[in-house]
Image (cartoon, rainbow, N blue to C red):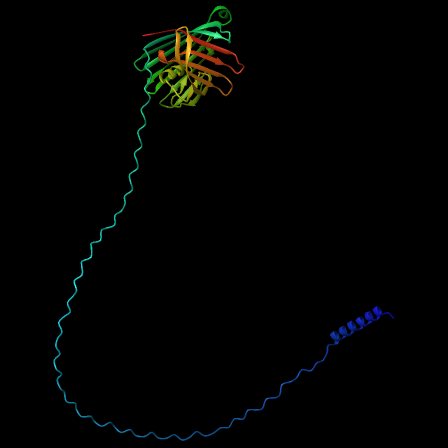
Length: 326
């Protein structure tokens, strides 16, 4: 038998022996403690009580002789040391909050450029970069007290009058206030047909703008400084010179929009009136249309040239021919 087989048999025998002992249990006797001896108690008689001895009363003591004690000299009262009086405590000062700083008053409105009581501007209308003469336009300004009236009439001339009949008429009426023009009503008529008329009414007390054709009037909150397309040019003249950018809300009677003008600077402009110094403003619309305006400094900043460029690049211009006034 091999060594490995014998080791396996021994391991099996030992395992069986251990399992057998666990099943039957090994009886192991534990050591027992030795029995304790019984405790014996004996009863004994108490000893007799000893009677207490009688205590004799104490003998009377002789009365003591009273001898008066010598009078003690009275010491003078201690002198109090004078201390300086404490300084009076000042009441705590309560800091009062400083009054709010007064807001500076709003600056007075910019002085307006004075205009004559009546002005008439005559323009020639051109189309394209070749400046093809297509019509004429006359704008009239009148003021009576604080009430103004603006009238603009445009007509086709030459061959174009055969294709474009009638006139384009615009009228703006309102008030000349310290901040400029406050239109009250505006209307525009295209040609001879009454159904091609758009209008706008400005309710400044109710801050409401109504605009559109007579049968399709719409409303819009009326913001301060809102103009129509005719009054806006004279509002620019009244508030010139300018710098930076100008934001104006404008209606043409059919729609309402916000215009942003950018000051391009001063230019020397050649016109039928001669060479004039003009302020150049430019307005670019999000849809690509552009409007350039030149205001003549020597002529009350009145508009002497306007150029419109649409998103296709086509242009139309109006250039002043004469300015007369009273």
